[in-house]
Image 1 (tube, rainbow, N blue to C red):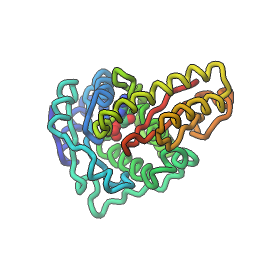
Image 2: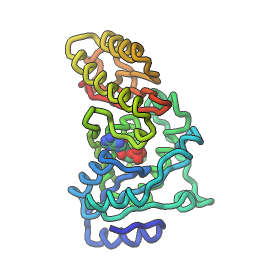
Image 3: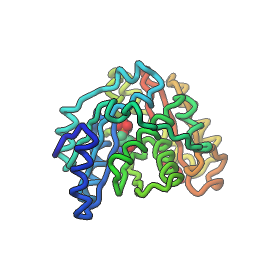
Image 4: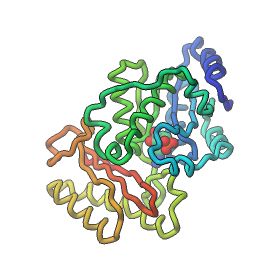
Length: 281
Ligand code: AMP
């Protein structure tokens, strides 16, 4: 496995694979890796000749400077994990390498409702920064396949939409949420939880699993009411708890209102924003 920090070195390395007509798989991350991330790498390794994992904490997608400063940076440990699962190239560029002074990165894509609901309402500018950096990385890596986690459902939906709108020649693959044994969705931010917060966090997925069961028999407003009561009885801070059409990310009243329905939530525990979701239909 190679660790590369410049665009030119990465591109000349990848050209060797392109000449051989080998498929290139790409997994963008912000590092502080866990088994959720390595599941994406494994999937890419199984489907491509070469797998590139980028590690880049993108300043433009952080609306909160403190969150950016506190974001864990663990390149050495990350590299060892990536090597163990067969990743071929770690691309860990500097901010200057990703954003050279004269490069135009602004995209001005209209994502319709996709970037306005849920996370979009809480993290102003987040999806603009995220979509622009993913586009920048797609331009650099030019992968055949792009692997993203269902864990960040809205992020996946926006990137998929961007690929469609710009007609980019890449296939996007959504990978299932990897959870801790107690059900908590793995996240680089989980290490910030206190021992009590960690126990509290584990209950989030239990409430979601119960909501999915309830949705089999109860109307969705009742499903929501029961779940929100459980959160409020245990004094969780709920940013949103939305049952949405996977295509528009707009709220649905009934499961019949859309072909595919997902329940997305963000709950704050110890000031840490924990995202989770579950497909209802
Ligand atoms: P991040 O570094 O947290 O921005 O995540 C990089 C990629 O890993 C994104 O596509 C995430 O959706 C994905 N990811 C993060 N956590 C998980 C998880 N628990 N299970 C599956 N994929 C995940």
